[in-house]
Structure formats: structure tokens, C-alpha cells
Image (cartoon, rainbow over all chains, first blue to last red; front, side, top):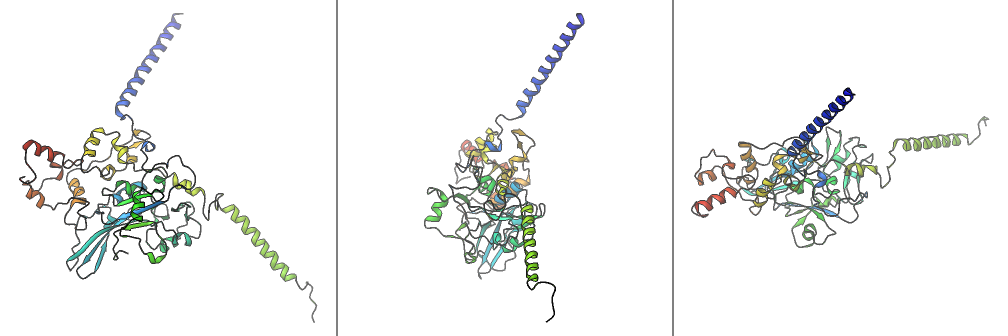
Length: 269
Length: 181
């Protein structure tokens, strides 16, 4: 009888200690974990109405990308964000920023040290004539309406969705490199880690979850703009439907890019 | 005329048989090798869209960082650096928070790294930057002009989150204007 009571008491003790310990640990954890830590799904939508839409294609919106080279300061935020988002291997660039320098003699010099990932800290000193004009040009996938890369892919690994995104299926890609050669804008590369073709996707996975592409989100001067052309109040619609110096790269290739540039100079290739 | 054992059209039958066999085997192998959803929407694997859609998001937005850092939010959102991304200097939020829990600290730039980071955008010597977008300074002329030692770091006068905060406060205390600094 006494033994039974002792047993009960010791069990009670054990339970008591367990509860106290548990409570202490939980309490101290609450102090460590900031209240309301943001899960990635808890971030407010930047593109309204995209969440919860799991249909294979985006039907209500028609996305366009605009790069304003009259605003770009060449800070390379976009390149940093892009590398972080995709863990892009060193030496490969899904997006990069080029520096154009035009001298008095109208010679054009283009450079892009490490794709602009480290920013531009030094001026170019190898130019013999005084500089007449200089500017930055960010480059990324042009999301062509008639993509050459899709046309040449022999295994159906590169495809165009009905909503206009050109994507790569890394499970099917055999890294033959045809698409890398076919792209007029040189945005494709063979990823040395996955051993497949890779390129900018305008952050398709972010867009489908209502977030802006990583580069657009971080641009401090709004040189990169992303929006819906079906929305007549959107900035991209207004830029493309009102008088602006707007152009695409290599229009003669007939690829019809969905990436537009504001203030593009004829020297840019 | 020599007499042939086979019938005059037997070679045609043979070729047809071979062609049909090759065709049937080809179609069967293709069906076995191709993924099920191939051709669902076009000449590609239909489920590849879903795969791409479910790629993990690694960069959040400033809202995702500032939700847990209210003190920084107050400074950052009031200053001229409010458009600068937190993750540009500190790294992606996915390396910091996972499933609502802090998994690791993100680096803070220190010392000369800060100066390098500032000059990445504000260095006048890189002439390609449009004046409408950003305010630029030349180094070390800026330090000489402000009568401080030339080895001063940017963050000794400028709060990196709100660059003009301390400058404005100092001016308010001393009561100096923009001209006679």
C-alpha cells in the first residue's frame, strides 16, 4: 500500500518536473523566436490575385517586363538577388548588367565584370578618347513570342507556356546546347551543377505565388518593371501605350521579345 | 526465263513487314520512354510547369524582413534608403528563417565593406549613373569638403538604413543650414 502511494507520488513528481521543464523551454524558445516570424507564404502579395491559382496557365494576366536604362545605376542588386534566388554557380549569369561607354570618336566599349555582380567600383581607364556617353544596360531573358530556343530543342525540354513564359524542363534536358547557340540574346548557359540548360525565367515560381521577380523586387531605382498588360492602370501598360522611347533588342531577328527597354540606344546589341 | 521459287511480290511484303515491325516497336518504345504528361499541352512534359511553379522561393520582400525587425523598419522606411532591399546587403531570407524559425543569422557588413557597398551606387567617378536616380559623391573630396578625416568610414556620419537621419538630427541640434556646414 505504502509502496503504491510512493510510486504515485514519484510519478506525480516526474510529471511535475516534466511540465516545469517543458514550460521553461517553451517560454525561453518564445523569447528566442521573434513573434510572427514571416514564413515565405506569409508575405503580402505584390501581384494581386496570383495566389491560390493552381491552373497550369495564367489566363487573366499578360505579363511584360520593362527595363528603363535611363534609370539604371548599375548597382547590381538585381544580379545579387538573382544569384541568391537560384544559387547560380559562379561564372554563370541568369541576368547581368553591361556598361556601355561611347567615346568622342563614336567607338563603343562594353564591359560587364563578373556580370555586374560586384557592382561597378572602377571607371574604365583603357579608353584613349574622352567619354561622350556612358550608361548601364541590364540583360535578362527576352521571353520571345517566337522563341528560337524552343524551336531547336530536340527533346521538348524547352517550352513556351500558353501564358508566354519560356521555361526549361531540367528533367528532360540533355544539355546538347542547341538552345544556347540559338538564343539571339545569349541568355542561356549550361548549368555546371545540374548539367542542363538554364536561363532566366522571370522568376516564374515567384510570379505564380504573387511575388515580383527577385530582380524587380530589389531594384532601388525602379529601373526594372514587371506588370500586367491587361490592366490598363499598370505602369507597364502606360509605358507601352504612351509616347516613350521604347524598343526591343535585335528586332530584326523576328523573335518578338516581351522584354522592352525604355531609352534604348542604337549602340546596344 | 529462270523460274523463281518465291512469288513476284514477296520482296514487297517483306519490306512492308519490316516497316510495320519497326513502326510498332518505335511507337511502343516511345510510349514507354516518354513521361505520361508529355504532349498534354504541347511538345513538352505537362508536369514540368508544376515543377517550375514549386521551385523554392529564397528571396522574400522587405515586408518579410521588417515584420520581425520593427526598430529597423522605423528607420529604414523613413529614410531615403527605403527602396533599398534588405536582402541586397544581408542575404536571402531563406537562409535566415525556415518554417517560422530562425535557423541562422545573416551577415552584417563591417568596416571597409560598408564603404565599398555605399560606393557601389554613390560613386561619382562611374559616370554612367543618371542624376535623377541617385545622389552621388566623389571620394575622398566628399570627406575633405565635410572637414573630416579621409579615413572615415561612411557609417560614421550616415546611418546605413536612413543615411540622413543623424545628419538631420545634428543639424537640428546645432542649428546649421545646408549652406554654412
